[in-house]
Length: 317
Ligand code: FAD
Image 1 (cartoon, rainbow, N blue to C red):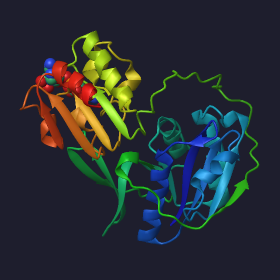
Image 2 (cartoon, rainbow, N blue to C red; image 1 turned 60 degrees about the vertical axis):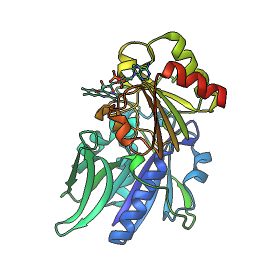
Image 3 (cartoon, helix red, strand yellow; image 1 turned 30 degrees about the vertical axis):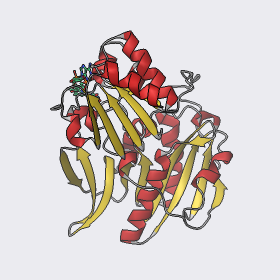
Image 4 (spheres, protein in one colour; image 1 turned 90 degrees about the vertical axis):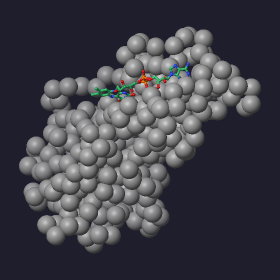
């Protein structure tokens, strides 16, 4: 199979999910034989080459243009269609990022390709290569097959491991003549400034649930988060209550996380929340209810009132 891994570059950096997409391509190559190349998409992307090199790609194509800075669906699609028409790849892989969720369906439409979103594994079955997907918060596993000559998949980052080391590839800049008739234009990005690590990639995450009923308890949880050098996350109940902004939400309709340690405080463990923490290595749950569902998936349960346990944890750290 001839595979292209499309990776978006944001301000000279690739996101950790890009590594999962590369690993996925490596696994498909191993199962079907063939090769994979990488397309870096963005503006001023040369510095990002090092992050994706050394994994055995055949080539690294640089799709570099000011119109690609904002990762809008229209110019991104045009650039990738240009590359696809030159090389005729059989499989196009991208991380299941917000960016890819926006442009991949358009790309699939323009190239008349079948598409599977959020796949976690490629499986060889009698009927051919199939894609495994976990849906309904991981309660259901599905296998899907794409029958068009070009297949497009996005990869669920937390379900796939790190890429294996391989040979270096040559970086090849592409001449893109993107049309200037864009119907949407990118203006600017503004980020919320936080000293804490990014929730999606943090090694340690503290999650706050509805059990934290007061501002005083919340400030203790934040203190604990900072003492651990952790990222702060929350359940939807907390976000819906307006205690924390939307971007902190972990779960099915929020972020998926894969920290080494997830400390869940006052969280019941609804399936929609657990869907976002499946890849966490060690889960510690603080809850006053010994029957809370989260305790069934937690590695360590601390049963008691968080109003007493969190200050005690702070004392001990
Ligand atoms: P609760 O379920 O109210 O749990 C609070 C917990 O705190 C309880 O277990 C309680 O025992 C404990 N507690 C209370 N007081 C104390 C105390 N003093 N000390 C110690 N423990 C205490 N939820 C998400 O999180 N993420 C999602 O992405 C998400 N997506 C959803 C999508 C859909 C379509 C739907 C229908 C729901 C979704 N939800 C999601 C909501 C989900 O179903 C739950 O309602 C939510 O996760 C509950 O949040 P919680 O655990 O904070 O609150």
